[in-house]
Amino acid sequence: MMTEQITLEWLTLCDKQDLVPGSGIAAWLDGEQLALFYLPGVGNEIFALSNHDPIANANVIARGITGSLEQHPVVASPLYKQHYRLDNGSCLEQPELALKCWPARLNGNRVEVGSDSPQVNAA
Image 1 (spheres, rainbow, N blue to C red):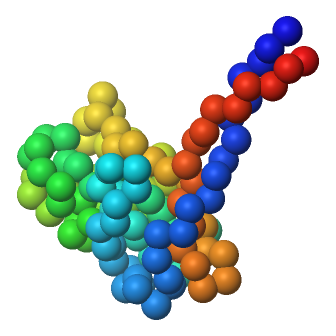
Image 2 (cartoon, rainbow, N blue to C red; image 1 turned 90 degrees about the horizontal axis):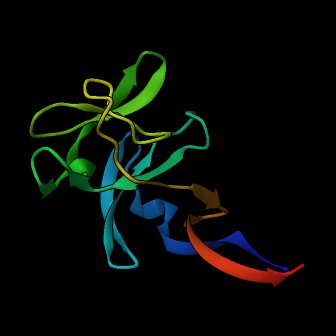
């Protein structure tokens, strides 16, 4: 019997010194634009979301303002001001909307983002 198991491959996107505390930067991963946020003291401190604002149809999320609403770290879209949770991408004002999220972490001085890659195992 064959089973498919998802493994996480950690990819280095940049160094910690490339980030601005309390703010976001844009980065590329597998042909997609990501918005990376560095919030010292909040959760694991690094958050990775899609940079694409689904309402404005523009890659601008990395330029949004970070904060906290309903006890969750959020980013406000710089164009229409919807708030997206940094930990899961959900939109607080419009629950039917969500930004894609990636697991992210600091590994020493490196900023790493997890990329799913299916792996087939024989059972």
